[in-house]
Length: 156
Image (cartoon, rainbow, N blue to C red; front, side):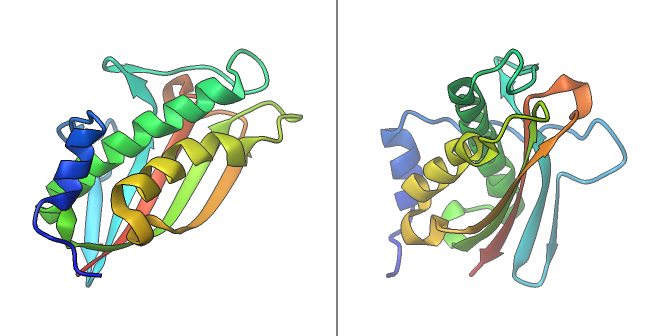
């Protein structure tokens, strides 16, 4: 199916989503790199109102709160992706999502947390938003963030 110009932006507007500017990296890396038709987005931390969403799933963050944080990351990732490709309508496919969930050793709902990102990408990009995915539980994430997600995307 060929997308009409700006339909991704119309969908974002209908969802009341405003894409943020690309955040400058806090360490020695780039926010994105393109090689051929693939764009690799560096890990994005969960942020709300400019502040990192901190905490640990299974300790002081619920699965629903983690899922909401992952959705916020999806919005940030789309902002970075827009900066990388210039027009989100040029996205052929969301290829892979990799999610790191700051969680206790007995927390086993990383996949449900990551759905916050995956579901929004599917809603915005339709079939092109269906992707492969990994969701890992980790002992800690930079700045104490509850979730970090990276993305691989194919452009037309």
